[in-house]
Image (cartoon, rainbow, N blue to C red; front, side, top):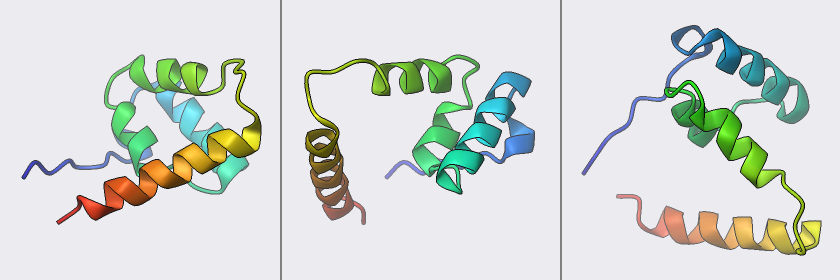
Length: 78
């Protein structure tokens, strides 16, 4: 099994620290997936751009997909 260490704000680039601040303001926390993407200077910003792009799916449809994926992923955590 592979283990990932989730970085803290002080361990990521300045540009990703700014994104951490925005996530903290908007969500109240920084999800571990986002923090892990922040180990790369551009991956977090790229992911958020992709996630927030215009879609033909409605917000509720996207949320259902996110919840199902989270539930399936949880089943595989040992």
